[in-house]
Structure formats: C-alpha cells, structure tokens
Length: 194
Image (cartoon, rainbow, N blue to C red; front, side):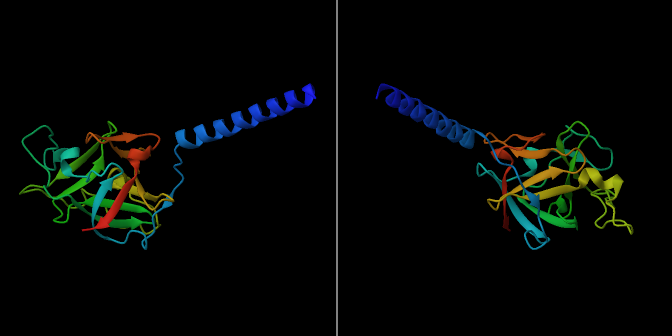
C-alpha cells in the first residue's frame, strides 16, 4: 500500500511539474509566425498604424533627413499627420509615405528608421523607391532600403519588417521606435483606414 501511495504521489508531482512548465513557456514565449500581407489584407491606401500599446506611428518617432543634402539634426520636421499611405510594390512589400507624398520612411545603414523629407526644390524622383519590380520580377536593389515587408500575424495584427536588414519595427510604450532582430509584442501593429 505504501509503494502504491508513493508511486501515486510521484506521478502527481511529475504531472504537475509538466503542466506548470507548459503553462510557463506558453505565457513567456512569443509566437511570431506570420505570412506576407496580401493585397486583399492591405490594399493600397491611407492608414493609421497603431502599435500594440496604442501609440500611432508618427513622423516624430523617426529622424527626418533632408532629401537634397541628406542632413539630419537640422531644423527640419516631418509631417504632423499620423496617417501613412501604403503603396504595394510586390506581394507583402510596400513603400510607406505620407499622403501628400512629401515624406517617406527608409532603413538607414545604422539600423535605424529615418524619413526623407521633401522640401521646396527637392527632386524626389525615385528617392522613395521604384514602385514596381523590374521586368524580370525582381525588386530594385537601389530601392531596397525604402521597401518594407508587412507580415500578417494570426491575431490579425501586422509586423513591419525592413527589406534591407530583415529587422522588425518595434514601438515601445514610451514612444521609442527601434529595429529589432526578433519581434516582440511591441512589434505588432494594427492598420485602420484613415
């Protein structure tokens, strides 16, 4: 009888340990499986992009760069509008720019997100990237830093991934926009029509 009780207690302890371990890993791990957004998920248009924490993606979270002389930390400011126009280049690949076309996002070589700001006298032709793949179906290599893959998460939110460095936009609750190698919950965004 004592042996059966001991076996029963050990079995209960093992089952409890396994269940507890499964629960801990279920809540601590973050599932980031996603597929490229289709044109039916996110057709071309103007959207408000909102982070997991409820913060709208805005120009003040990126460093603006003048398009003529490429200076930054210069008295130049991005758009006050919080909406962004998505222009589809290929399956899941988009250019993100302001509705007036005077600002667009790009990934800088230092792994930060910046924006070209077009002021008067600026020749902006193709600075935000070519809008169609080449005749061979390939993305323009010179435009790759302005292309972003938008990936749909199973919970109907999206990741924004830089095509030039394969890093994910992450907008924390304190309003800091960074690029991360691996996504977190702060890398999830909602897109709503503006």
